[in-house]
Amino acid sequence: MTALAAAAGAVLALAICLVRLFAGPTLYDRALAVNGVIAKLALICAAGAVVMERAVFVDVAIALVLSAFVLNVAVLKFFRTQSFQAPLVRAED
Image (cartoon, rainbow, N blue to C red; front, side):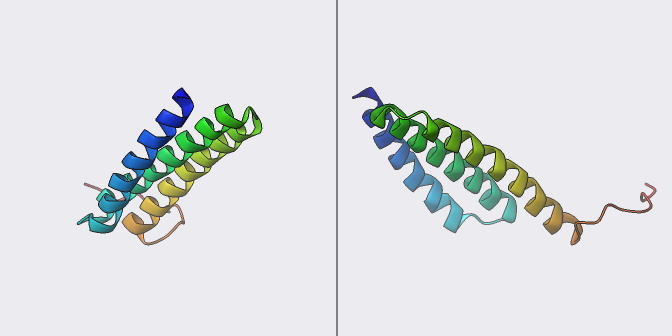
C-alpha cells in the first residue's frame, strides 16, 4: 500500500518535471528536468518492484539512473564544446 502511494506521488512529481522540461528557458534547465524525470521513473520502477515482489525491477531502476547520468553528462559536454573530442591544447586565461 505504501509503495502505491509513493508511486502516485512520483507520478504527480513526474508531471511537474515534464512541465519544467517543456517550459525550461535554457538548456541547463531542461537537462535538470530530464534528470528529475529519470529519477521519478526510477522511483516508479522501484515501487513497482515492491508491489509485484520482483527484485529485477530494482536492477532496472538502478541501470536507468546510471545510464541517464552518463548520457546527461555527454549531452551537456557536447552542447558546451560542440564536440565530444577532448581538447588538444588548453586555452590560456
